[in-house]
Each structure stands twice: as C-alpha cells, then as structure tokens.
Image (cartoon, helix red, strand yellow):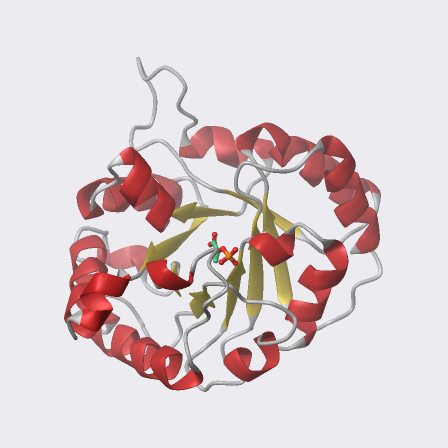
Length: 246
Ligand code: PEP
C-alpha cells in the first residue's frame, strides 16, 4: 500500500515567519497523508526546529542538492549537509533546474545517488514540454528521462525514490493536465521504471498547477500517490486543502 504524500516546493520564496506559521499550523494535523515542505536551503533548519518545537508532523526537504559530495564547488550544498540540517527528502531534476541550470539526466542521477547514500529520499522530476506533447512524443520522452536516471542508480535504490510527473506546460501556468493525461502517463512511468526499481511500491506524484479545486480529482486516480505543489504550497490553508483532496 502506497502512502499518499503531498510535497510543497516553495522555490525562491518563503521567510522564517512562514516557516513558523506552517510549523504551528500543521501541529494539529491528523490526516493520513504525509506532508513535506521544501523551503529554500537557508530555511531548512528553521523549519525543522519550528516543526519540532510545535510537535508538527511535517517533514522537510531540499529543492536541490550538489552533484558532488564535497570539495571546491562554491555555492553548492551537499546531500550530507542537507541531512545534517534535518532534510528527509530532496527534489532533483525539476524542470526549472533542467532548463535554467542545464541539469541533465546524468547530473540528476548523480544527485539522486548522493541523496540515497546520505539517507535522503530523492523526488525525481520528469516531464515534457508542450512542443513534445503536441508532437505526440510525450510517453517516449518521459520514459527516456526515467530510464536515463534510474539505470544509473545502484540496485539498492528499490522503492527508496519518489517519482514526480510534472509536465512543463502545467508547471506554474494554471493549465493542469487532464485526469486521462495524468493517469496514462503515471501508468506508463510505473511500467518503464519496473526493470530498475520496485515500481509497484514506488510513489508517483503529479505536479503542475495543483490547487484545492483540482486536487481531489487528480489524487483519486489509481496511479497517483500524491502531489508536488508549487504556488499553492505557499499558503497554509491551500496546502492543507490540497492534502485534504487525497
Ligand atoms: C512545481 O514547481 O513543482 C509546481 C508544480 O509548481 P505549480 O504547482 O505552481 O505549478
């Protein structure tokens, strides 16, 4: 049985005040859905401490990690450092990082490997552009992204990763993928991932303009195990409402 999980990606937003607001607001949370917030790296320890002070059930994750474990890489944050801060999850391969920072599948795999070694669960993002979808190549494209990353991970990565399908045309645009598009891609991802991981046990999240209005429909789909949420994760009420749709 796969436990549903809703992950908030704050991107380049958030303050210490917001960390405290979320930690105290989630303190009484008794839902069955696992909740994770990925604030900027500078705020991870603040959110971890606030969550512990409020006995809050929220877990904390990173939005990125270095592809190296240490050394002369100015500005980077390693998996070990994330672990030390208290992160249990980290996003890798987000479309913004692939497009704006040149993150290739090889780099995504290196990052995921370091996270696994540090005991952190990687949330591996994949997704096609509108051009690829219009050309009817989306299944092939996403399948290739999955294979390129998972084939580079150690076999012990079994069910220790989370996969997130985030069509680029749906991220931050207000254009959510339809239930049919999401279910069919998630089933495809599960079958493509099967040679590399225990894909039946692996959680596959949907991300792309998830809101309280569309969450219930998307999260009820058989191969959807939760959501990766950007914009709606910056407001506690909206984030909780999305999780309530699970
Ligand atoms: C994201 O950044 O991962 C995301 C899904 O953003 P949004 O929910 O705003 O589309």
